[in-house]
Image 1: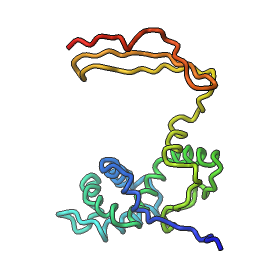
Image 2: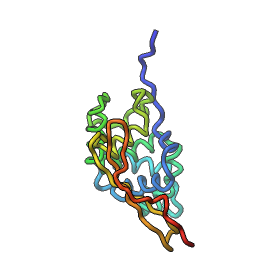
Image 3: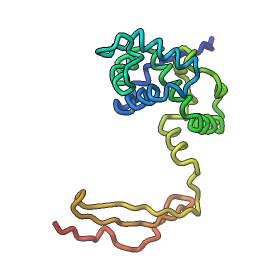
Amino acid sequence: MTDHKAHFLPFHAVNEFLLPEYRLKIIQQAFAELNHLSEERRSAISRLVKRHVQVSGFRNSALAPAPVKARAAVSNFEKSAEFAAQIMSAWYELHPELAKKVNDLLTAREWKLLPLEVDRSKLPGFLTHWPKEETFEVLDDAYAYPVAIEPGMTFALETQHGKLHRFGVRLEEMLYVTETGIEMVTTYKSHEIIVVD
């Protein structure tokens, strides 16, 4: 018998993948642009901040300046699935073009997705099942490089060698994509460059 029940990770599990400075940036932007959010989202965030975020000198933490409030809210974002869901949904509302771009990418890869307008903060968390071959790295590459690399394409690969802010050289290699791999087009013998300190 197979288990057809959906499995979820709580929303605050995203903290395992977020750099601390990016987490703070997401929270700061949600607070700084609170007035650009839907009334429902604004109310939910303000209610959670008032109830769970402590900002020294403020009885109602929701009234604190956005940067101060954001720093105080980090631990709540790390521990509360509800708070993390509201902040991420706010970020989603503030970036509709990016949301559409990611949605289009996943739809083109035959993912079954909820419509863009669905309020995901009402879900119990992130679905834990992804198509097996769709690792984070595969999706990241598909997003970063939306054009497939195919035979006949030519690329310039530019590398840099030297000491940062002191001296250096940039070497450009031309690469041609073949059916079996790549072919170096440039003939300069960059491996024979002598480094003088």
